[in-house]
Length: 348
Image 1 (tube, rainbow, N blue to C red):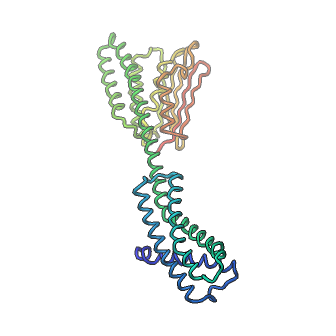
Image 2: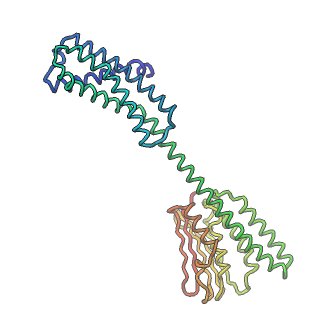
């Protein structure tokens, strides 16, 4: 293949240019190629082959110059610049060889005929083939530049998303710490042993958050984490709280991103009131995990989505980043109750 590209193809290129020029010219003047004098055809074919070798050598030299002189970037200005230089060099070559050859072989013709009839074909056809050759030869370079550009853009976008996710996580941790420590603070005045158990529970919760690396985990880990959080919150809650928790036994190895359900539960404990009713449930429906929290609220309280603060806003942004087009979050206040329902499409 290398032998063909280096030694055979330039000759084929020159002959292709020659026979195309010959075809157009003979058709225009009603002349037959095979009826012309042999030495004229021989000289023209020899010059065409020579031009083919020279043209390919010039083109490849220009390509090396382009790659060394200018960085590969997928911009139309760069393509036009390269093409302009290549076409200009090609025109200089064909005019330096073909025009003198044509004038020498047809010295008996009127000078005006040579100038206007042949020169147009001599310039137009090689230029078209040079453009075609450029497009084919440089296509791999521009494809590589396109792929590299797409990869770079995706890398930058991914780094931006990871940075934002880390920021959201860092933003949420102080929020969680404040609420958990506040719970233990009130417990210490009345139940020292209970406070110790709460601190132990709190350390388990904190460890889970600290070692989360924004990768998916089995949903049972989330459920266990959530159950520990609920146990911690129940300590501070009033005795009037009527809490119902139900987790589907089918929830096991499904993969989800961590800390998605916690803000909804935390929000419910924060705003529960009225008849102090709270229901927490999670189940599998098809390829989705459905998590639902409903709690009663005091009549004078505003809807939690207006006062949820960092928790809910943080959750909405994380869902947009982690589950684009694969989740739904519904927050609704009705008849003294607030309902939060989250559906995410899980991976097996």
